[in-house]
Length: 144
Image 1: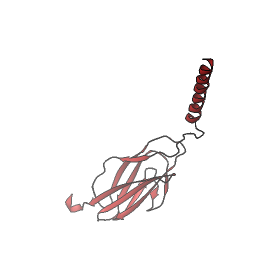
Image 2 (image 1 turned 30 degrees about the vertical axis):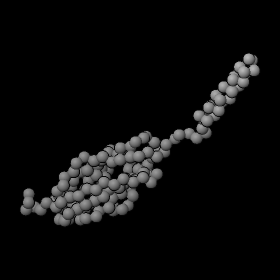
Image 3 (image 1 turned 120 degrees about the vertical axis):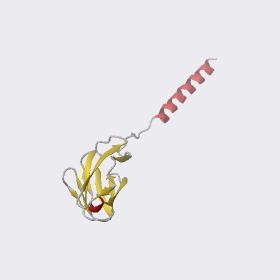
Image 4 (image 1 turned 180 degrees about the horizontal axis):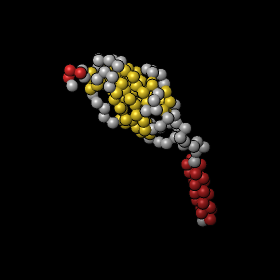
């Protein structure tokens, strides 16, 4: 009877040790890459040459990795205009600029009388990219 109890005791002890060994891992679960998105307030659909439209933006991050860096770039597919940040920086088409805050404003100024479309890209240092498109129809002075 003692041999049976001893056998079950040793077996139970070995099973517990194996469970502990399998449950623990050497790798830490540290995330340095989190999904993110860009929320914007609604913007006007019509614009007049020389008019400036404000685009209110908020970077929505899934996690809070403090070392994450974000960048902005834009490309104008239709029309001509100027895009600048709320700190006064004028963005040049297809150049990458650092984003220094999660809530920011963009200001688009129309420089033509045609339809205008801009694609805004937000990129993180892990290579993830999101895109938002803004389109504006020209509203001529005679239509006002």
